[in-house]
Amino acid sequence: MALVHDLGEIDAGDTFLFANSRSEAHIEERAGIARLQRERGNGIMDLNEIWEEQETGSSKETQLIRVVDRLLPFLLNLNTNGKTWIDANVTCSQVAAALAFIKDSFPPIHDWLSKNIDYATRQGWLVDA
Image 1 (tube, rainbow, N blue to C red):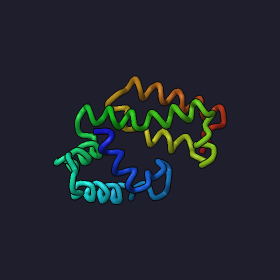
Image 2: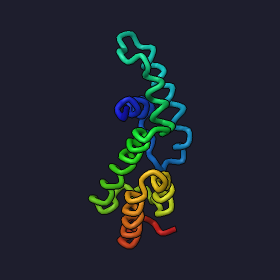
Image 3: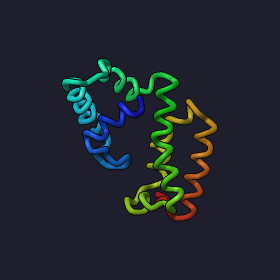
Image 4: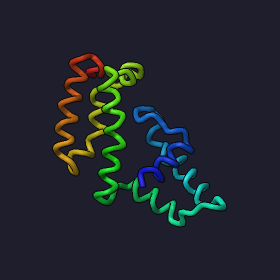
């Protein structure tokens, strides 16, 4: 399911999480999945449905995949002293907002993320706006 969802992102160019155009990214991603669904030789008959299920995050499985999808770049930033955050002038409130959905589904993970957002802000990796 995660890989199917990534196909849409790859086709659309994988919009940066904190880009101004992020709210529109799903439109191009959805169009890419629709194109792949129509391709001869596509062995996944319910490609659109799998992509939509992951996009909406309605099941426990999709919620976990969404968490992992956000956790990996977060960990990368922690391990590179906030390189991407610094390069893009990302604020702690932007990161907190992008991870807020985790609080309801996985509170312990959200608590850990919040502590590390605070740490990254103290280190100067995230702009404290």
